[in-house]
Length: 273
Image (cartoon, rainbow, N blue to C red; front, top):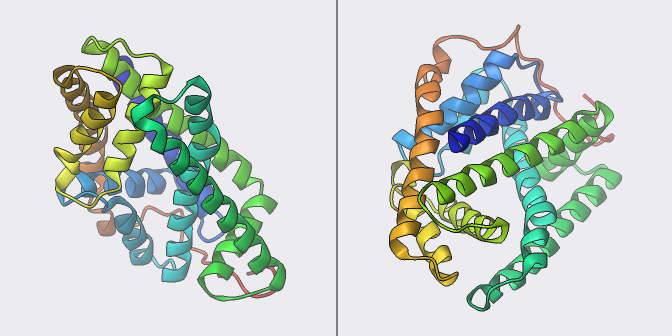
């Protein structure tokens, strides 16, 4: 029950986050945000892993949002997810102690942190110099998000979604008898997230479980228990995301906006419309 509730909270946080991130480019209704977010989940579960973001971009484009703005929105969403995980979740895990077989995680964290900070610096310089192109649009979008106070809310919602997903996996581990603490749950979540980034079969069937089993195996967790936890975590994802997503998968059959989308492309003069 805790796992299902936590996973439902992930969707509940992701929907207003997407709406906030879309604010600089389009007036998106709450129902429209639900349709795009959960239909993206359904696309991943039905057609193949990694299709959630492309479907969201496709849905935005079909509703009249410029392709550049749609790509920028999706890129900002992924950047915030990476930022929260690197700055919030991983430091806690590393502070609790990294097991010997997972020493590589520290190096990976350091490299990823450097990349995240470098991206932030590049976007800052691009915005300062008034450059155009995709980076210019992304930098302009960040300026608009910050000016409209959407950025802080989006970051907070991203943190809530990440922590809720972590709680979902923790509950799954405890439900099958794994003596999981915070450190175990965080590293298992890291393995699951890395597995989900790999393009593969629908719903990442088998890939997600492998990520959990391999990561927990390095922590000395029995493979049978680790597999059971991975299967339960996967089942909860499908249970929460797929039914709602299926009902919205054909979003192009109706317009989920309050009105015609108002597209605001970033221009060289600090991203003004």
